[in-house]
Image (tube, rainbow, N blue to C red; front, side, top):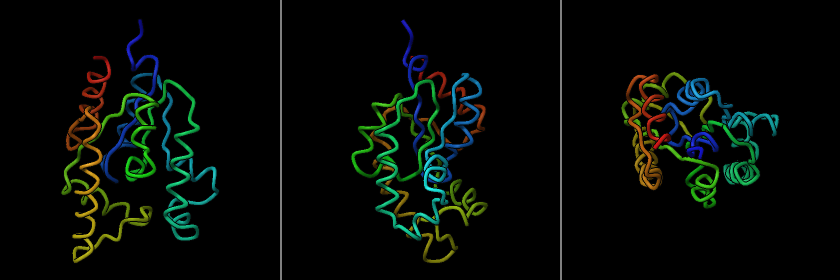
Length: 174
């Protein structure tokens, strides 16, 4: 009998900048799976970047696109990197669990801040400055951490990406 990782998908969740895309690509390559980035797929479908969707159509519209994407997803043997907010809306937690094994990449707030400084323009919920806005980002981080913790499979996201990939492979082979 095949274990879950051989017959199903692995879904990576975590805050923006947690490393879902980086880890997902490496994990897919190591397992011979396809890699799917939900934000990239939605951008392709809409012909707009996530930031443009937020600006032109609003966050609620984007969250509905995310929910529809996972509801209609039917492929197997994929590593799926979700947007940071995807698990937090529209009962997406339940939908993600149906897709496969969900792994929370738990990365510290300090590491996330450092990573996000490098990609400010592409993240619509990020208004990163070293002043008051960082407090708002911390609040969002703490709020979402509680939701992500509903997924019982967790890896520390502050480690070397290759190490994290190996940790996920151990988790999903159990």
